[in-house]
Image (cartoon, rainbow, N blue to C red; front, side, top):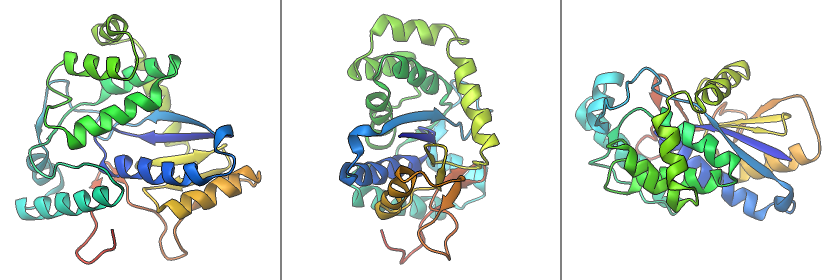
Length: 245
């Protein structure tokens, strides 16, 4: 069975959703027969390479939040990440163009190291001090840590057309499947799970997809919640005060 995950490195709910999905997959009886493929989705495709900004400043400018709202939202996202055992810097992070990271992820897919690289990208972006947007050598170092060849990674970054068509193809397919935000999980092209749902929802989806049911059906935590927390063009859903983490 194949599970395809559309996501962006800049999406905090993709970071959290990956951990929740992996928790469900680890307990799935047929986990060794599940292939996981990461697909590209850019939340800010119009941002130029090198155009970076502090996350808090980006949130206030792009989504009309006050600085206090942005700080509170980041704090609650940090609490959700911590509940999954993930590090999350609520202040001091920056935001930028992720296209080159998606291109490197397609290289990593060909080399069988995609899951390792996306995990390192997430951790570097959300939990580590050094920016993933500051220079290409930062990305090369992460690619090497994932098991890729440094020169091969540099060659991809030096050629803006390398794997660009693959990234765009993923993004077109996301639109065709109706994914307006990420994370978006598609299981064996039979079931869809939108957002960073709880692990038990992913477990349910794995069981149903394994059983071969169709057509593509969006699965939510309950009948009153259509989608889990996700990031889209209008921003990232932020848990409100008093929400469970």
